[in-house]
Image (cartoon, rainbow, N blue to C red; front, top):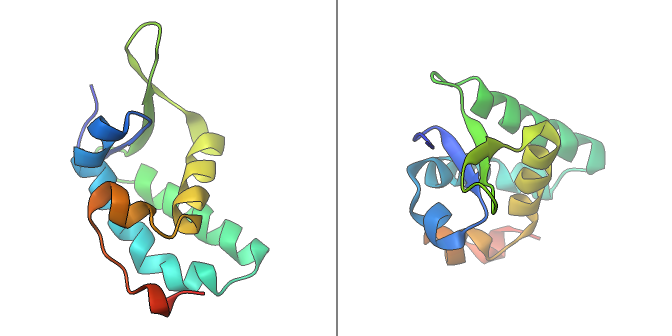
Length: 109
């Protein structure tokens, strides 16, 4: 079962309300300006550091997705975690639509 230190991928209704998703998205908002103003190599460093920070929690944070066949949660691995993290930075309206976190849109390119 997912814990509060887990980020859930997929199933918008479930993930929207999950404490771990809200917590991870707050980490994204703290680094968003830096990310948007950075070049590709620095953006990768930011993504890598966030995924590493998330996984270093106690208990460790995971990036989970529910199997459509078994309905069990599984860890998607580092590659998918980094891809999802980068996509969260790049979706300007995602945080507001999914989590009710309103950003000053004039502050970002």
